[in-house]
Image 1 (tube, rainbow, N blue to C red):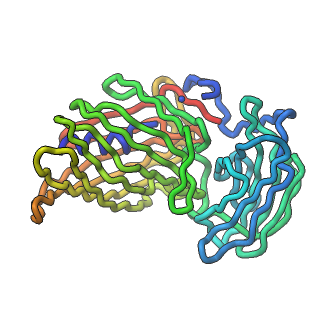
Image 2 (image 1 turned 90 degrees about the horizontal axis):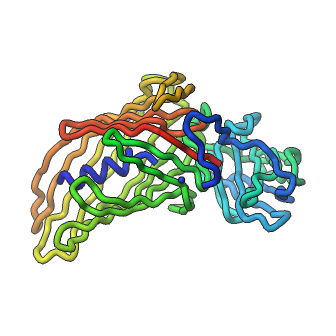
Length: 367
C-alpha cells in the first residue's frame, strides 16, 4: 500500500524543459507582448454565437501564412492582454467550453511562428452574453466585431499557472532530486483541451511507473487531470492505478474560502502467478485559500502576488478480494501549494504521519 501512496503523492505534487531557459531570479515576461514583423497575423478570427446547451462557442482562425500554432487570450470585456485566459491551438477551428452566458467577453488571437516569435494580436472580438458571434481580422491589434461568449469560473484575478506549449518548470525536492516538467503536447478529453506532459521514473522502493498529467484553465478555475498510472512491480507484475480529475485552484476566491474534491481510484494487477486483490482508494479534499497577495522567497528569489492553498486530504483504502471487501486504512495528508502570478507553482509541500517532502522552483521557461 505504501507504493500506491508514494506514486499518488508524487503525481499530485511532483512539480512540474524549450526556447530559452531562464534562471528563476531573471526577469521573464510570460505574456511576451513583443511582435515579430516577419510573423504573419491571422487574416480573420471569428467567434460563433453562444451555444446555451453546451455553454460553449466555436473559434475559427484564418491563417495568412504557413503558421500552424496560435495563442488565444480571452476574458471579460475590457480585460488587459496578459490578464486573461490563454489557450494554445494547433487547429484552425475548435470549441471552447465552460463559458458563462451571463458574462460578456472579448477574444484575441496571434500566431506563433516557430523560432520567429509571435505576430501582432488580432482582436478584440466581442461576445455579449448569449448574443451572436463576432469577427475580427487584419493582422494587428485592431479589428473585431461584437457578439456573445465568455469564460466560466467566476472571474479571475490573473494567471497563476501560465499554460502554453513548451512551458516548463524545474524543481528540487527536499532530498536534493531535480525534476523537470514541460507542457509538451495537447490532449482533448470530453471536448476540453488540456496541456499535457508525460511523467515516468522510479519510486523510492524501485517501482517503475509512467503516466500523463494534463492541465486546463477556465477563467479562474485551474484543473488537474491524471491518466491511469502503470507501474512494473516485482516478478514482472504490472499495476494499473486509475486516474482522476480535480480542481486545484480558484484564483478569485478570498482568503478563508474553500472548495472540495472527491474522487475514487482502483489499483489492479496483471501478469501475476496468483490472484491479487483490487485496491480501492477514496480521496476527500478540503482546499482553502490560506493566504493571498503575499510575497514568498524561494531559493533566494522573492515572488510577489502569491496565492497559498492548503489542502487537507483524507485517503481511505479497502481491498476487494474474491468477492469480499476488506477495510483498509485512513491516512491524513496536508498538501500546500504556493502559486506566483504569471509564474506558476513556486513551492509545494506534503506531509503525513509516514513521510514529508518539499519541492522548490529553481528554473522555468515560459512562452
